[in-house]
Image (cartoon, rainbow, N blue to C red; front, side):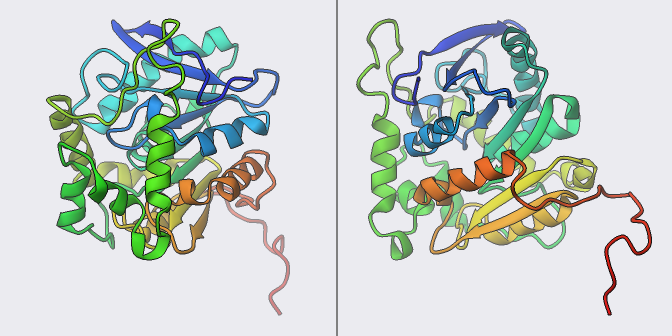
Amino acid sequence: MSTQETAKTLFLTADSIEYAYRLIGNASNSSPPLLMLNHVRATIDTWDPFVINNLTASGRRIITYDYAGIGHSGGSVAPNIKGFAMNLLAFLSVLLPTLQVKRVDVLGFSMGGYVAQQLSLDNPEIVGKLILSGTGPSLGPGLQRPMNEVQSTVFNPIPGLPTIEAFFPSFTTGEEGEEWYNRSTNSRAAIAGRGGEPEIALFTTGPALINLTQAYLTWDADTVPYSLLQGIQKDTLVTAGDNDLIIPTHNSFILSRQLSRANFMMFPSSGHGHMFQYAQYYTKVVIEFLNGQLPIVPFSAGTTIPLGSQGRIN
């Protein structure tokens, strides 16, 4: 079975853009594939193997994907999240028929959660279940802003120790952040540049970072996606660390409250990188959610509950 360390890098062309992607795990499971949408500046090479390999060990097939203009994909970085979602739809429209499936479950981490929300709003028929981790809604009431210093760190042209600290605050996580960074950035080292595999593509920098920053910040200032969130009628799992410095934990909770079919789970003594810090437990919860083993809302927004169907209070 392929893993994050061994999966072959594949390419397909959609709307004149060549996209890089990987199919990881077995195709024998009848469940929809799980599409992984990574955080701002990340690539298919920087996914944490602890997360990817734990998910595939459950029998779930994983799709990882480089956004247009990022990592190994061609084209230009879209200047807004709606553009990201449009490019993703083009990619899926070509890929899914080859896999003989009509929809995917979607896991969006950080900015990937923004793209997942927009895809669900624009093309709900292609999305099954949603996992939104370390992410928040677009502009709306009651949200908290991250510290300017943290946001500047995220978009620093040269990622380094401050970036790791923003994901894994050392005052609560110790050296776990550095361990995550090392295993994520080196997971492909054994095959990169060999047998037709590309060299490792690390975090986006240079001219592409300008459009990427614009897309990220434009979402943060857009009131429209927030106002439409209750129209997303998807079983959703929202997860957050209890002290997220990049996308405040409070915002993840508000996101869960705006989604009519959402569970919210908070991980202790963790920040933006909670899913990597607790990789084994996080992936266990994700699989239980996808398999329908977690409680879900028994009705959608706008549906009237028959009187007495929820039992008596007194």
